[in-house]
Structures are given as structure tokens and as C-alpha cells.
Length: 258
Figure 1 (cartoon, rainbow, N blue to C red):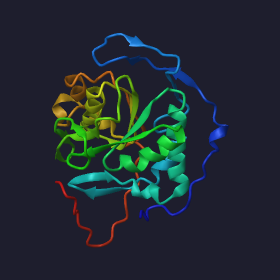
Figure 2: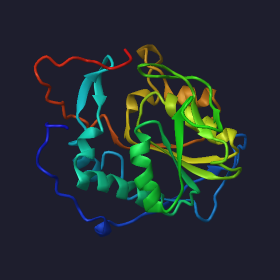
Figure 3: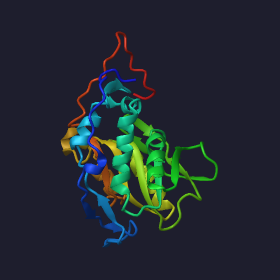
Figure 4: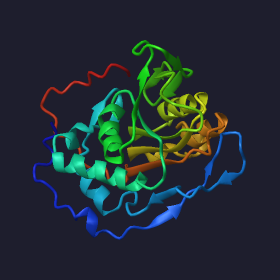
């Protein structure tokens, strides 16, 4: 577990927060230029990225040098704190309670940790999007790139998403957007609509970096794939993720990909 922080944070009661709802326009399909606002399309905007709650949770998201990345953020830090994990679930459930989703899709593998409790809180089905060769009766997206290598496409079982289904995609972190783009492609392949891609951490440096930075652009990727109409939201950004993991002497970066 993470030894960087030992004391439990003081959290405000969720019920004490003032709730604000905003209409969100969602295209009925990726080909449509016009957006249709349905009566149920309301996202709870009480929780802002890097807001007070996010800053408290960030204390339990240490970073490690891992897979050749200087700052690899580890959700194991908050998973060992039930009150922090529960607060994250509550925040995501509150955000999407009124938007009118049909299912929650979690991405292999950390989306399998975060997605089920959020789906249970919303009383919606949970769908696994897995690596190739792990599930029967599945269809696959194309291969994709991530910040530390290339991955085979994700898969979903053919009977899990129906035409017109409104799907919330959940993962722990979005950086270049490669994994999320694969998941979005799968939903569209099944005839569904992605209401939003939601992550605990969003690395903003990859949203639209300068052309001379050498960094991949998530905005360009989504545009090239014709999925730039799909919104992405993260509770916490790198701006407030400042806790460096305390490493034992002799620590070795033993990540599988470099």
C-alpha cells in the first residue's frame, strides 16, 4: 500500500453539497451533426475537476517511476482507504444519477475495480471490456497506442450493448486517450452511444499539446477517429497530484512495458 499518507482525511458530507444540474447535448449517433437534448440528459456538476474533494482524494494517489514513466499514478493508494474509495464511488454516482444511462462499461483492468460499485450505486448493468482472447462470443476494436506502448484492441461480448443503448465508460486514468478511443469504438460498433468517458485522473498535458512538444494529442486522435463529440471527464488532474511515493532502497522499475 501507499505509505506516503497515513492520516484519514476529513470529508464533507455529500448531502450537504448544493447540487447544480446542467443539460448536456448528446449526439444520437457519431454521424449526426445535430445534438438532441433528451429530458434525462442532466449531469450533476457539483463536483469540479481539482475541486475540494478532488484535492483530498489526490493525497491518496501517489506516483511512482514505473514502465519508464516518471509519474505513474497508482490507485492502490486510495483502494486501501475504504472511506476514500467510497467517496469516489459516491461522486461518480451523483454525477451520472440523472443523465439517463443504460449501462456502465469498465475497461480492463482497473475499470473492473471502479466500474462495478458505480454501476451498483446507479442500479445499472456492468459491462466488461476486456483484452483479446479473454471472453467468448466477443467482438474486437482495432489495435491502439498508449503512452507506454501498443495494445491489441479491446473486446466486448456481442449481446451486452444493444442499438441505442446509452453507455457510461469508466477507467482509472486517461492520458493519450488510446484505451478510451478503443472502448468508444466498441460501443459505436454495437450501435450504442457513449454518454461520457469518466476517469478518476485526467492528464491534461495530452488533451491538446503544442505541435512541437512531441506529445500525442488526445484531441487529434478523437477527431481523426470521428469520436470528438464524445465528452471526457476526470475528477483529478496532474495539477494537484503532488504526492511522491516513498520508495524503499533498491526500488526497481519492473513494469512489463517500457
